[in-house]
Image 1 (cartoon, rainbow, N blue to C red):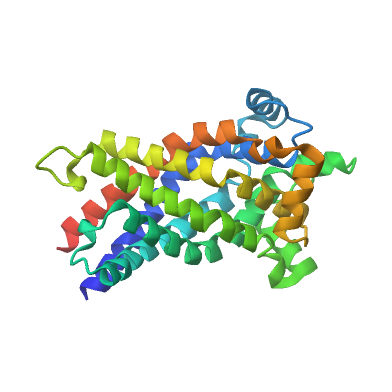
Image 2: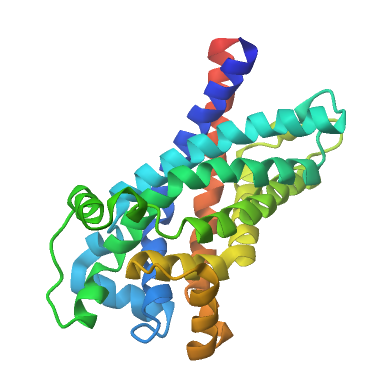
Length: 295
């Protein structure tokens, strides 16, 4: 029973964290996707931000928010529930009695394995989000007016054209991004929590400000480590490409140079610090609240 309760609490904590992450970080995520997929149109973060607001208003910065919410709630609920289960598995393999006593590297390995499961839930919703965010630029590239379309109609269009496999376009690059990324994400979070824990206290007692700082640090480490894979994933999903990840990666390097793999890194880092800080604050707060109610 305790095992099921812990999984439920991790799942709810991840869900609340996902909501907080989207509302804090969505505008700069939109800027990131536009810069990744149309680098010839946007030479800088500020220019992309201003042009988006001029053309589409503040609402344009929140394009794809609904699928982003679905993606983050689905991903983070599965991710954190999987993380809790994988922590128990890693602790058992390492001969550690309590997951609270795991070292940062062991927590990083638990995050790596948990990301396999969360990738399966993330890929379809991330696909819809990216296409909605880049819809104007795709239409302009084809000399067409951008279509007014929502996430549900776009999903039906993808299913009609490509079937269920079409919703998993970019799954390989999602695995390549998520699994090593969450190794650094959870490793960075737990290492920074251990570093900021005063003598005589536990990591759960560091307070909300330090929790936000640790979450922000984890987010920055995550994105710096995985950004090239994220660029490739965005290109594949926006274009609907069926080319393998390695071919798309080499094509970007040959035609645009290796720095193209870091287009949009600036807004991503700016977004990730407050967004993942909010994610972990909501996650830890929800866990504490639910443990108090259920114990």
